[in-house]
Length: 330
Image 1 (cartoon, one colour):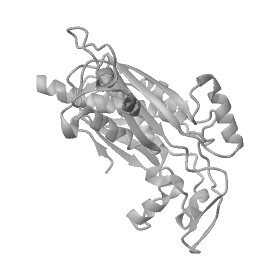
Image 2 (cartoon, rainbow, N blue to C red):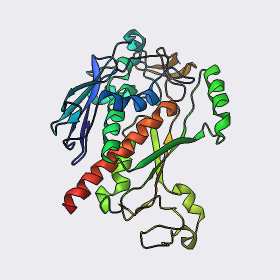
Image 3 (spheres, rainbow, N blue to C red):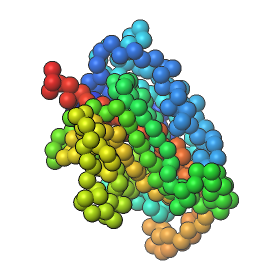
Image 4 (spheres, rainbow, N blue to C red):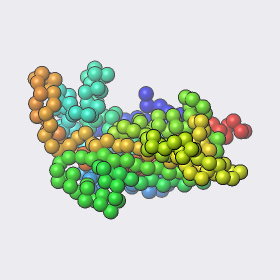
């Protein structure tokens, strides 16, 4: 469903072309300083309008509806909303019968039997990530000593950041799209967060990351490159009483629990399914394969704006684990 968390509880709501999208948060400690200004940096990181992003521009003015009084959280549920004001729903009518390949159009129609709001992707739209980013801001306030660093380390197979702009320009001219890999690092993570097995820190972080449309792979530390190493090389030797390790192939987690070293997560984001190139795909109305030309406004590389969203997911998972750990200790 649209709910996550044991103590840091989050519920997303809305659709791309509905009146609004947003998030309801519960379990947020009272007395946390919080105003609209706290959200602006991360909302700007997500905003469209740059090279390779959708031309759909929304104001994304944050509406803090409940749970905040005189600049501080009250301990009551926090409701945050964003209005949808720049929509072109007619661009999506044909997709009911002629769904976009690799998009949620087909599976949504199967699951919800045609009752889903298909406009702009409905509940599957990236618009809903506004709620994730907003929740991430609050999570990072709870984790005020944690330092987050997020970057793209691979864009369409290219690993040279100085060449990324050219890669994006080329794919835009081709009316195509590209994916890539985002790396998220978190320093100063407290040791002891997470549980063995089903609530392992890897599990909860991955659970949130895979909720973001377009995410197809998650790894920690050395990730799949660890297959090239023997145990003697992969093992992270402990070098002092704080638990600091000489290497960090495990990405800061052992046995599902944070070990106090830097958390390192890599996320593969697939190419945007909605592309300008004509595609030959099945039309359920005519019962034959036909050319599909996708209308609407879409990102050539959703990974560009996804960076702050993925960072938020990691922060939310860590905040929930931190509050659980704190409750145990208290």
